[in-house]
Image (cartoon, rainbow, N blue to C red):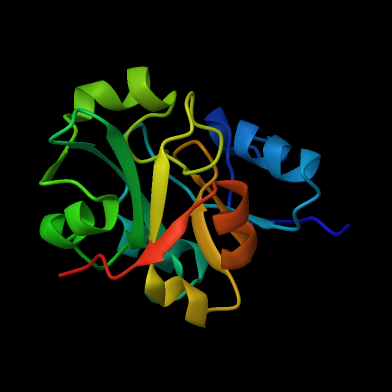
Length: 175
């Protein structure tokens, strides 16, 4: 099995270069023997918008996906994974999930619900596996990148492998 670590730029305090640190997402992928490429990008303590992440990692924004967590009218949670430059259509998302409606969860709930922080939320390795939907455009791409579980890290892998590991489905989800 082949794993690739691509370091865009990682610096420690004082500017010294440090080695890539594996995240739980990377460990899960390796445990399941799923090939991936890790990308790192410079960041502060705050989340960076997805289009900037794409630019910093040298990836096409259509290939970099963001993970959004919602709650349905039934109070069940759902995960939607869409291209970073796009906006989730809540009506299409509700239809895909078989719900009357869905709403984004409050940012303060992300960590308790998923184990991740805003800007580092990945569909892989959440505290609980929620029903997950990917925008159908992912199927046209050889690889897509999602958060590797922390701000500053992305994991690029086959969309088929990602859908399989998260037991996801695809649908038209964007505005």
